[in-house]
View 1 (spheres, rainbow, N blue to C red):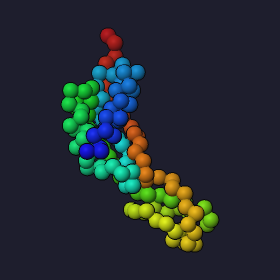
View 2 (cartoon, protein in one colour):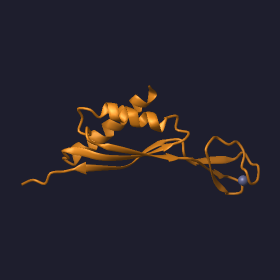
View 3 (cartoon, rainbow, N blue to C red):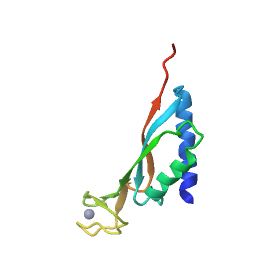
View 4 (cartoon, helix red, strand yellow):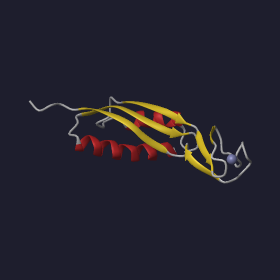
Length: 118
Ligand SMILES: [Zn+2]
């Protein structure tokens, strides 16, 4: 499962972050996953729940926001969103399209539980 290695990478970031903040627990993780990132959000969630056992994030919840493809036309400047790849601008027909979002995974937010020193 491709998603397991993605989650393994995510955990490296999460654990590093938790360590830097001297956190005891990771309680919440929010990800943005592009519809065209190649990762299946449902599988990511499953992979997260499998992977988190015996880690600092064992009790963490993950929320995954699906991000549609967002493209900007280089000729007419129109920005549109789509559920699948498009080759031509729907407005002027140009193929000069720039991808703005929807093809990657972004860690948007994580919440940590940090015990204040007593
Ligand atoms: Zn256009």
